[in-house]
Image (cartoon, rainbow, N blue to C red):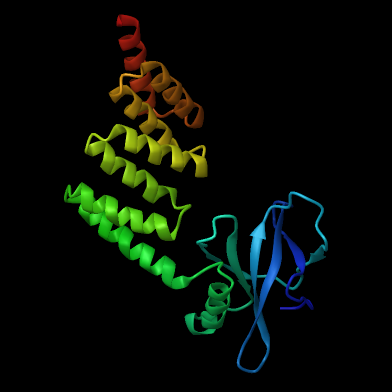
Length: 228
């Protein structure tokens, strides 16, 4: 990989669609001989004038490794011009952990809890599943799928208000989440709040006009509201 970059540099890479990926260099990755084989970066879309723009050249056939963050504001990416082994990344994980940006153990533990929660949910052990999903969310606050799943447990337990709180949290993270949007409507029906339920089913259809379930529930709710 070519390019004389230092930590803190802002660089960009043009893709085949003439769009740009923008990166901030966090860490320079070197092998045992001191040769640079990759860069640890934060990837983001620029929303202001960037302090420095350079072309990240020499990146033909580059492999981009995506790594999730516990910090919800950024996506953490590793760029390298050769396959990066787990052993080579150890120092990078330590660095990110020290910076409070990413902890591989956090994600590994979260995945463990998620699988345990799924098993509990399938076994209809909803209280245990809620506890497990909560452990996942505590470690990865932006993991809206786990938040949705926790809401489903509460719905199965008839805890509509608690489920709504989770679904609102999920939608605050991903506003076009079809599952959470539809489920909000379902919860509101259970609370006999038909007018607001209709709003969510309509919003669900804005997200996916072909969603059969949203169409059916919207029609049924409108009919129910007209009947009084």
